[in-house]
Length: 89
Image 1 (tube, rainbow, N blue to C red):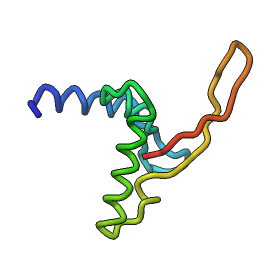
Image 2 (image 1 turned 120 degrees about the horizontal axis):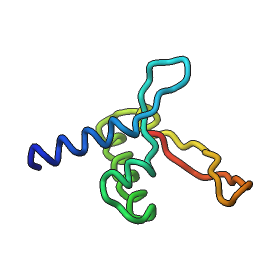
Image 3 (image 1 turned 90 degrees about the vertical axis):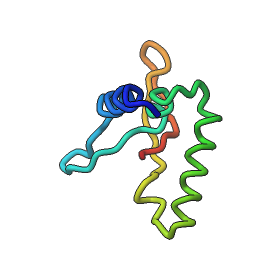
Image 4 (image 1 turned 90 degrees about the horizontal axis):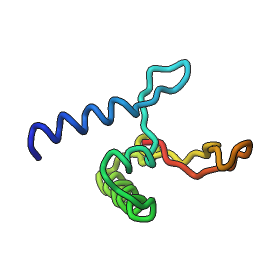
């Protein structure tokens, strides 16, 4: 990967980074990472997340330290919200 691509991705990731309230724990939502990496469909990117969680298990790393299923409320219409499955990375 060339230096410009790395710089661009670093900037993208810095722009979508979140922080746990009251803590200094940085995380990202998988659906936002998906867009930064150029994936168009969640179905395709969720396979990448699944493979990464298998890699964690294979290397005796606790998966929940890196990937956590969460529910996020999202706006679906003018005044309506819905629960949305999400993964914190």
